[in-house]
Amino acid sequence: MIPTVPFDLIFSVLVGLIFSACARQQFAGGAAPWGRELAAVLSFEALIIWPVALYFYLVYPDWSWMYFVDPHKLPWGVSFLVMLGYVATLLAGWLAGWAILRARKPRVLYGVLGGGSLFLLVFSLLCRARLSNNGTFAEYHAGQAMAVSEGKLVWALGVTALGVAAAVALVGFTLREQGKRFRND
Image 1 (cartoon, rainbow, N blue to C red):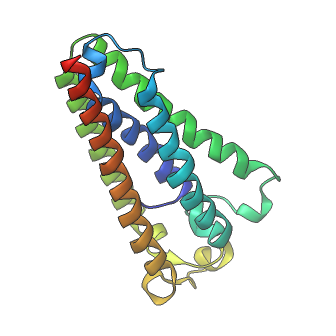
Image 2 (cartoon, helix red, strand yellow):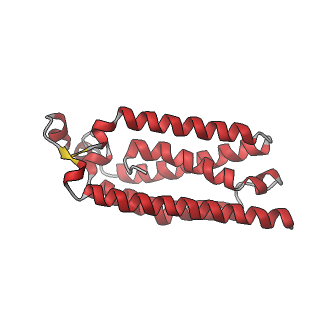
Image 3 (cartoon, rainbow, N blue to C red):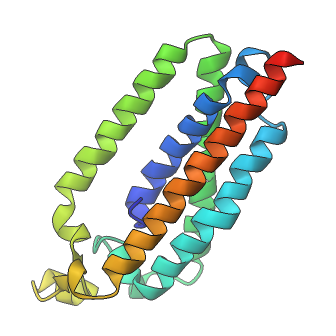
């Protein structure tokens, strides 16, 4: 996970798709997307993604916007809209995965996951200069931003990436295990 606003919006869709793939037993068996599984998905968003995103948004605001916009010129309340955007994109992925699985097309879901992952990888490669620099909006555009590895940002990225990856794995595992119980009921 690279906690920048553009990256995270795409990442949230993919995580929603991953979670729906993990809940495929429930969805294939007729479960609605609004059941107890959704509580796990929303808990992931509230307990993991929001705190991580807020940290980077508040401590590294220019980097968080990937220097596309100057965050200091954005109106107050944009951060609240971004947080709602994270929930909306996570739910969009979750519901899209549910719809695909309800149509009994799991291979389509895996294809969408692969395509979305490839898109995120290409996006990251195209934006690597923006992701690998740390500074203000003006410093970046003047070519004076320091490398990410020269400050605390690299450590924060490492720790939060591990935490988010572990949380995705744990929620996915939980959804999958609930599916085994769902199948046995």
